[in-house]
Structure formats: C-alpha cells, structure tokens
Length: 507
Ligand SMILES: Nc1ncnc2c1ncn2[C@@H]1O[C@H](COP(=O)(O)OP(=O)(O)OP(=O)(O)O)[C@@H](O)[C@H]1O
Figure 1: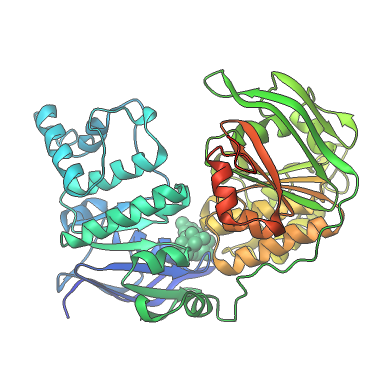
Figure 2: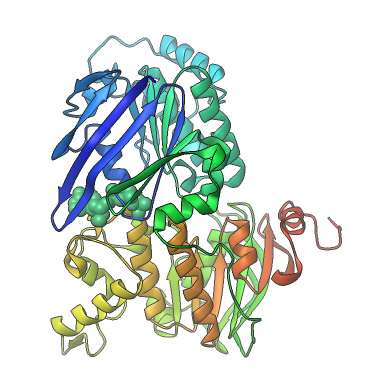
C-alpha cells in the first residue's frame, strides 16, 4: 500500500504535558483521512509538526516513501503539504488573487502577472468546484468562501496533501455539505486530505479512514464505512457515550428576561433585529434557531450591552436595563458565553486563573481595598477548571493561549456558569468540543435551568437547539417567525420556519 505521508512514533512534549506520545498516522494517496480525538488530545500539535511549525522530540516522517525533516512551513510547501488553519490568514482589503500570490510570488520578488495568476486561480476554482471569484475582496465574501480561498492557496502552490484543521467549525450546515463535496473532488483528482473534526456525522459522510487519538496516544485507525459513530466516539473518550440529552420537563417560573419591541441595527446601520418580542422564564431554556446572520448577533449584543438598541425595551427581573452598561448588566445577573472565544471570551495572554476572575476580581474575597487575594483566586479558578475538566499543562497558571481550542471553550463556559447568573446567554456553546465534552456541557446547561435560572441558547446546530431547549424561537431576517415547544417539533418544521414560513404554513 502506498502512503503519501507516514508519521511514525511521534513524540512532542510541552511544559507539563506530553501532547503527542508515540503517535502513528499513515495517509494513503487519494484518501480522506479523519483525525479524531478529545479536546487537547494532541491533534493540532501533530498537524503542526507535519506542517513544520513544531519539531518533534522523537519519531520519523516519511513523504512519498522518503524520510524528511520538515524544518518550517516553507519546507512543507515544497514537499507538497499545505494546511488550512482554524483562523484564516487573509488580508481583508486585498482581493482573492492578491491574497493567493502574497507570500508566494510577491515574497520571492518575482515580476507579477496578476492577470495570469487570476486566470490560473479561476481554472483551479472550476476544476475543484470551489466557485470563488478571483477578483472579489476578502472583506466582501463569506467565511465559507474565505475558507475556499485558503484551499485555493494550497492548490495554487501545488499541494498534494491538504490538512484541514476543524474546517467545519466556522461553517453553516449548507456550507459543510459543500465542503464535503470539495474534499471529495480533491481526492478524485489524486490529492490526499487529512481533516480534523469533532463531528462524527461528517466523518461518516466524507472520510475513508479515521485515526483516533486519546491523551496524546494513538488508539487505532478504522475504516469509516464499517465503524459506527458510537464506536468511534467510544474509542475516542474511552467510555460509553450517550448521544441523547436526558432531561425532565421544565418547570417555568417568573419571567427573567423580557424583550419588548426590540429593534437593533446591524453593522450596516439598518435594522438587523426588528420589533422583537420574547420572554425567557426562570427554569427554562429558550433556544434561538435560525440561519446564521438573521439577527442572532444583534439580539445577543443588545441584551449583553455590547450594542445599543434603536427601539424597544429589555427587562431583566422586572427592571429595565435597556440603557445600562455592560458591567451593570453583569452585576445584575447576565452572563454570556460569547461566539468568538478568542476575541471576546478570553484574554489570551493572561493566565487561566486571571481569566477566571475577569468579572469578579473587584469582589471579596478576591480583593479587598485594591489588594488581590491570590489564595482565594487560585482556589476559585482551580475549582472551575477541575469541574469542567479543562486540561492544560500548568493548570491555573497556564497562559490561556497555550490551551487547545476546546479547552479554552470549556474554561469560558465554566467561568460563566460559576457566576450563577439569573440569565445565561450561551452562543454556540459546544462549537469545537468533542462529544464527551458536549454531553457534559449540555448537562450543565440543563442543571442551571433546574436550579431555577433562565438560559437563552443560540446555536446553528439544529440538533442541539431541539434537544437542549424547552421552547424554540425561530428567527428569519431579524424577525420572530414563531415559538414552538421543543418536545413537539422536529427539524422539518423548524427548517421551514427558518426559511421564513410561519407556523401553520403562512408566509
Ligand atoms: N504551544 C504550546 N505550549 C504549551 N502547551 C501546548 C502548546 N500547544 C499545545 N499545548 C498543549 O498540548 C496539548 C494538546 O493540544 P492540541 O492543541 O494539540 O490539542 P487538540 O487535540 O488539537 O485539541 P482541540 O480539539 O481542543 O483543538 C494540550 O494540553 C495543550 O494545552
């Protein structure tokens, strides 16, 4: 059997943690190979080694049968290995073509033939079904399209092996289907793909084989066609997993959050949320279902105080907070798990313990007359990290940037739930999490509800909205289309409403 890439017995240690411990991964030519593992299992580290960003402490890498040393990403490129990172590296006011040749021809000081480059990009885009306009500016195209530009960048440089690091985490369900088609067309043309993903459904739909790692060690490589989602999940977490969310019927109490005729402008200064009315009661989880960009961000930002409302009122526990500051709202019991964990969730250069007290450091016992109480802070932070199973090299003293993406997310969720807020707003809370962590986070959201608190859940995952929520508010184009009982609905009904068709069929 011909392997294009073999990573054999790879070891990589960071301070306090063995990220890769004797890992082996063999990639066949022309296959889509999924890399599956819990948050912090060592997937990104392994791929960073293959792409030359880290050097392994031990182990060998063979490319097309020859042992190689991949000293940096340029060497990886020359060997025909390309990588699309979770956070894209594109210049937003440049065109697609400019971005693709930037760092290639531009860096090498070659005389530029932009028209020729654009033609080549157009041809590649057609051949692989990418549908990218070479002349479009990055800032004008969707996130899904930006990801394709990153794929094109690799193809333009003749990559034979493409590494995609959690590509679907930033995509809408429809874009995910398109991405799967693109991956299939890549391998049909003889390329080979390694894809990191937590979504077992995607692995089933796209991959030929799957290598599972757990806590830095290889568990095994399986043929996807003959392995069930449950089997893969159990290999990954090392115990049985329950995909079904267990919960008792809700016991709604007083109204915690009331929105009355709320109108909020979007970034283009036109209403992104229109005359919106909603109630969330104590002891219930209200989910918001909608295609991305249909008013969800405006809704969340208005409630948390990140964006001002044009009209209408926001009432929390009977008091109007429409014009109050972010800090006042936090003090009154609003907590927020934000969509973008790197921009809003964590200060990446702070330690974990500093991040755990961002909202509370001014309170006792964490500080008194301006003096921080280190012992109390450490105890509080360690408690959160332990209960949410946040894995990192140095525990509360780890710099947040060094954590794996999923562990960063668990730290934020832990911090917000620990505040015991009367209203918890959770935006995409399980994005980037492994199935075991998802199960745990869902339990904690339901636990928060069962303690008589209100939860507003915003998620693009319809399964999650239907399984975790008690009631579901469906939005389309900034308007509330209808509210349904989660136990009595299904994906079809919600899907139609998301497309703007009201409950009962009226448009
Ligand atoms: N630069 C670094 N410095 C210190 N520790 C690191 C560094 N990069 C990764 N780690 C640690 O190595 C371990 C593996 O991290 P890695 O990012 O490879 O996991 P992952 O499987 O990709 O996780 P996720 O699914 O959450 O993205 C984690 O414990 C992480 O904290």
